[in-house]
Length: 141
Image 1 (cartoon, rainbow, N blue to C red):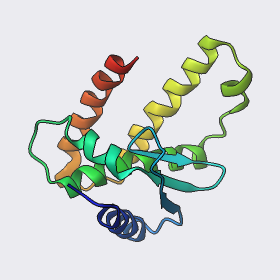
Image 2: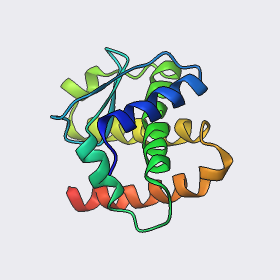
Image 3: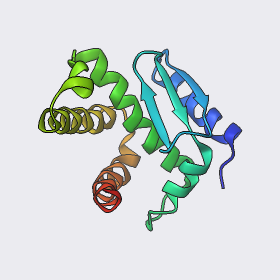
Image 4: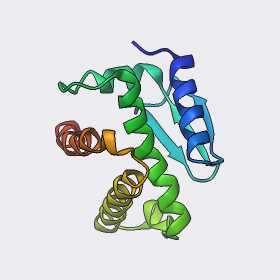
């Protein structure tokens, strides 16, 4: 099991390696393992959710590498918002179809942009997590 300080260390080291100026903080009310808040430029994480999420995967990878994989995906949101100016008002005021379309586009971009940062040795695991994550999302809907 990873503790808050373990995850903070992984996030800090990864952000430094990538030369990214993104804030990060623990939030025990977060309903997902990690998220990126574009308005505060902050990655938030819930260590219990992170550990639970890791438990969903049955292939060999260290817990630390799983955190990095989750983190690269979340950094993908940051990169997407830097490169694309999405009209986020759609999420508040758009119809359901518009909202789903925008969410799908942002999610796909986050995985793709995040993948550009993944070290070669973790690419296969990143791709496996991406595929399994799609199945997990379907079971929670």
